[in-house]
Image (cartoon, rainbow, N blue to C red; front, top):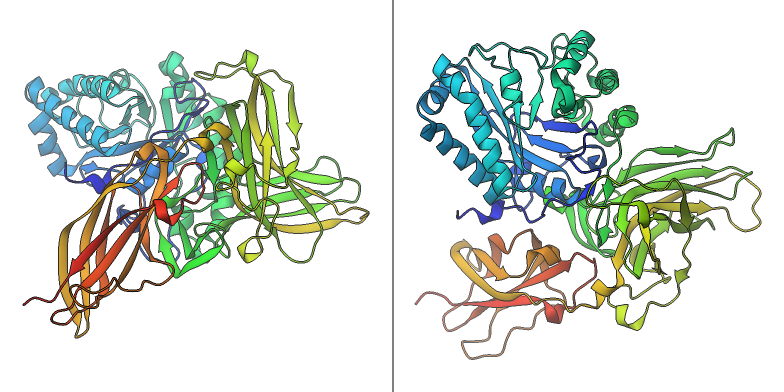
Amino acid sequence: MDDGFNVALEPLERRQPPLSSQRPRTLLCHDMMGGYLDDRFIQGTAVQNPYSFYHWQYIDIFVYFSHHTVTIPPVGWTNAAHRHGVCVLGTFITEWSEGGRLCEAFLAGDEGSYQAVADRLVQIAQFFRFDGWLINIENSLSLAAVGNTPPFLRYLTTQLHQQVPGGLVLWYDSVVRSGQLKWQDELNEQNRVFFDSCDGFFTNYNWREEHLERMVRQAGERLADVYVGVDVFARGKVVGGQFDTNKSLELIRKHGFSAALFAPGWVYECLEKRDFFQNQDKFWSLLERHLPTHSICSLPFVTSFCLGMGTRRVCYGQEEAVGPWYHPSAQDIQPLFGEHRLGGDGGGWVKTYCCLVDAWHGGSSLLLRGTIPPEVGNVAVRLFSLQVPVPPKIFLSMVYKLEGPTDIGVALQLTTGDISSCHVGGISVLNEMSSRHSPRPLRVPPTKLARWAGRCGQPLSGGWVQRCYELSLRGCLLLDLFVSFSRPPGSQEQESFVCRLGEIQVVDANSLLSPLPQVQAVTVTHTRWQQAAPVQLQLSCTLHWSYPLLQVRCFRIHHWSGAGRGSHGREPLWPEKPTLLGLAFANQYRVVDLPVDAVGPGQEGRVEFLVEPVPREGFLVPQAEWGRTVLLYSAPA
């Protein structure tokens, strides 16, 4: 219970269609080189070319897999997945003879033993705020143990549903009802008892289409609860895999099943690291037609397109630090990646890419390349699918810059539908008629909102431009966000463009008028000092504070330090800006080996820590409103 650093900040966001719908789902099982690599560093790490997943809008469930008995998903994965509305599962696995002994110890006895294990698994998911478990028994079981396995699964599933809203328990196709370890590559009478005892069944990978045909009868009304396994590495006698994974998915969807993509990190592990983004985009673009898009369902909706990694850190156009960094919790909501082509033979197109070369805020931006053919006035690309009931007034903002000299017009567009036929809590049925709007940019933001969008239409740092929009809609559902590119006035030629998107915000106007809570009670604990050099010390400590986490995207932690002028002297003169230490996704942060000045006899050193909240609405909080605490120190007598 002391492990608060590993507790996910992000609640599971709502999205459409919900997981409970009977539409076939997509599960992603992350099996990366044994697990717990660069992603295990809760506060991030400095690493070149890390693995990143960003096609969240296509998947429903993320499983973190490793060969430890109990695999708790690293908090960065849970934060990133929840931000996109994706359910996160840990893995409970037993293997080989040691796994067999463990299973006999808790499954072969009375119900108290297996219930105790289930209770602990529920408590772990509840405390760390992920959503359930993949149960993977990969060893044979005695008759007593296999007889208790269905009641173990039923008890675990029931308890999890009570304690973790939306929680899931899935069973992997391994043991059969006799207790033998005998992979079936399908749901059948040999393993159906386990499927009937939990939320879903994850098949082994060596299936053929005849397996799928048989399973249709077995699954009955629960087709979507059967997750047909696809090994992306294509090990064994499998259909598809690698860049042919679309062949597997086509057959799975043909028969109405969900899909479980195992080890999609193949594109990172086996191909050139320098081509990772290109290869990952290629992999998912091949699957795209089998992967229904999910929709964002709530405001505020704010993204700077940060992947949770970069070659430098940027804060609203100002470079803060240079050097590689990786922090999965810092990943923003990602758009729909791909290529949009105009109908006909005109050749107009827009393509989206991740790009680490430049950023408005964080470590990356979204690069859009395209062509406007002579016969059309503009091209547009859909970046986000939404299903948001629109409040009376919303504000939108877009930060962008065009590369090179060009007069191409850039505008935000959105589509709306009639809310009268929509039930937002379940599956939405919308009128076919929807309309696209091109709101008129505001030249000057309303005075009350100056802190949110203070420089509408004006040049910003680094060549960026901010466009702000105000929209009043009633009885509407916000459906899609587009960016449109239009040819310069008078141009008759084909026009090409390269545009970089730095940020998009969609915010309920009323939420921007509410006063922000204050960061309270900043304290310092677990202090440790080390002599690093004759005139330098290293300070390690833990900062704690109080703040309602549902109102914040993260915290930015800064410091000032210096030697004082005697024990009763004035405060040291700080530089104009404090130094950024890092990001926190909990109400605490561990400072590690911070260099500070050593002080002589009779002198006093001073370190000030500042906690900057980053609101979900995406505006800068003035420094005067940050939380702060001062640590005074002196040389030992």
